[in-house]
Length: 195
Image (tube, rainbow, N blue to C red):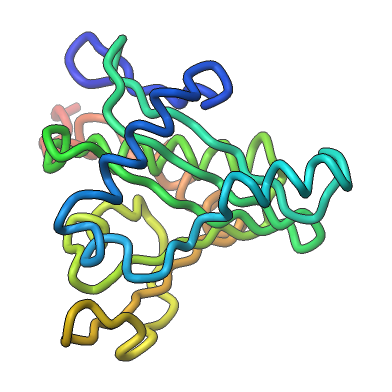
């Protein structure tokens, strides 16, 4: 919760035009290649529709699309690509420029991770970030850097690394247990009250 407004993930099916408009805006911005790379990691919507038509919702890959909302305002978009046979979810998140740098991406990533483990039954959650996208590198919400693909993306005449992140169910459960065990005052950097 930010102030009195709550960050939520609303299924894109309810706000499809907003979802498409936000992605179009993000991918059309001049800094898009430095944030998302030259390859789009997202499954294109037409392929998603074909897969569902051919194999139904029991298909091997399912994309869950969301509009990120702060109260009633749309602040970004999120995709969770679910690899059902392997119980792996891959996260993609994009915030509109005016909402960056306010920890909203971290909150949205937290919601996506929780949804992946609790609702989709993931055993592993993955994400990547282009090394030139410092904001994305900071908002992984407890995910563990698993590796770096050197010179993975070419933008203009420069090459950039791609950083790989992961979080296993056991690691996530351990983080939850640790968060519950730490008193709230101590977690905020305050000294515990003397007894």
